[in-house]
Image (cartoon, rainbow, N blue to C red; front, side):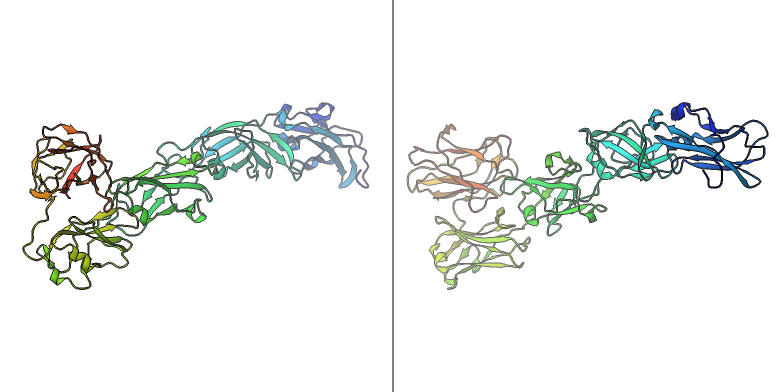
Length: 614
């Protein structure tokens, strides 16, 4: 009862009439009426105020309505929001009357219950992508672009949604777990919820269920709930992600002669990149000793916040590159765990980057030997400090390791060093005078051995041959340099004929040029060598594959002699396939009339030098 105003007027009614005071939202049209019928108190011209009181935003009062001289006073209201906005709630309807601006009375209240909004189904949500197009299958790359991240927005449209209603999206993974997405406030008739890119990345390759709940008011009363929509989140299609790249590579060639220091691997920002994503950046290649390596590049192993916009860069250590075999293919692999996993096998693989490595050229030349001239070293000129061997070559760089070799016929070679290059220039080694004089009358070869990095592949320079002694210089015996032979694959099997070794001490062995088994000529100067009876032959063989060969001897009619052959890599220069073929002491070798080199299947063999020694 309004103070001072009698509550003496009858309740209003409605059209349609809601039986039992129950309103079914699904049975009401777009409008309805509040009706005040004539009664003994009201007279034509009285002014009425109609009240519809429910939830905030779904209540109203219509003032200054004149009561008609005949019939009912009818006030039309919209079903939305005055019914829809009060679903699962109660409404009270009444009116007040005045006459000549003085209160006449107030009506009793009509109480109505509004049924659940679910009685009128809520529409399914819609998913729109970065082009604002509705999709049922979402792609991670925005359509119409080559590499732009796509977006996804859940859109809810219904006339029952009021401004500032709360829209909560339901996002269920295949295992039934719900992902909590941010709630948003709606505008009139619509709510839009952006799906975070981290959630989209997590769901690549999965089908999720999407729905929503509408809440109203501070107490978050449920207004409506939708059915679930199936949404397929596609994975990246093959070829859409960009491969990593080595910044210093030109095309598919990484030439170590064009830069110094570490290599840099770069990866452009990829769609759905986010801070803290785990990734694996690996490089695979063949080391100079023939072993394979597969290394994960240095960390950090997650995307840093500063890298989201510019992509990532990681270093390939210079030492790793310098230990890689020349001419091999380097493969750079990139994978990203967009699903938050820390398991590499679950990460999304990018296309590989492949480059061929051209190794740093050393430009080795034969060393200089102090006081050596015209093929001989006069012992009278050797100072007390010894013989100085000087190494200087065009490809010298700091960090390399260099040794000098003094090898006299019939004696174990003297290895000087190795020493690390700390300053580019010439490097001197000294052979003790006593060692040099022990080579008196002997042919000596001096060379330098260089590795690009500690423990790396060793390369030997051309040999400087000379005689230690006075008198006319002579060409060192026992060497066929085959310099006139065209480089390239040798026939298989390669046979050098007229090669004779006997087991008798002091008997002369001969090697001279002769046609190979394939008919081409292998030419070289003929030298007489003295064989001590060991039956040992040393062959220096250059092979880019270094996979191995089989060796055998031939008898005078060309048949192979079965012997035990021992083969070892050279300990001085592992860049060349070299070693000693040793005939077991109790083997009755007799006269050997041939030497056969048979490469392993699928590999090529090259012959650069053939040496016989005691």
